[in-house]
Image (cartoon, rainbow, N blue to C red; front, side):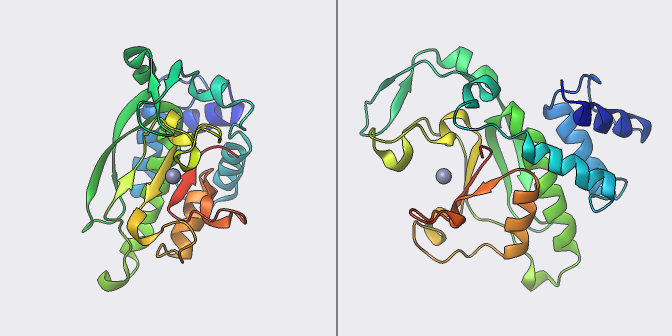
Length: 220
Ligand SMILES: [Zn+2]
């Protein structure tokens, strides 16, 4: 139970939204309610209490050490593809996930993607904030991705010598991979990166030894 999440759920309920159980646990219902409130202009994420809420979200991101406790523990074996893994209990494993719709701009593409239930709020709200910002821009300056990828059970760099990527837990997204490859200059605007980071994401573009600008993960 996270008191900050419970505070947000209570605030959303009093605004007339349906955040699900007031239990202080993040999930799709709270995420959808907060994203809708942001789009409706009923929640201003630049207000101090919501800035504090987002700070708390960021602080609560798991680390490599705690990722299984937060997103689930995969049972797997190596292969069959090099660097990939095979989940041994796929039905049970997928209960950690849910499918959400994301749209960055009113005139942009809508994505249906399967993500970890624990990052639905972060993604839905980041995209709601991005959409609101896009509405303030001239059409030709609006940002909307063409490709968004999330779930992929494998090792980092498709190499079993490395740890499992956060994509294994469906808690990372790759944005327009062809335009944002390893070592490439990102085509994602700085304001979009800042919004995703404010909703708890770690951006791979800031990694010194292996800059991966397509990659945003919800693990510190
Ligand atoms: Zn990635």
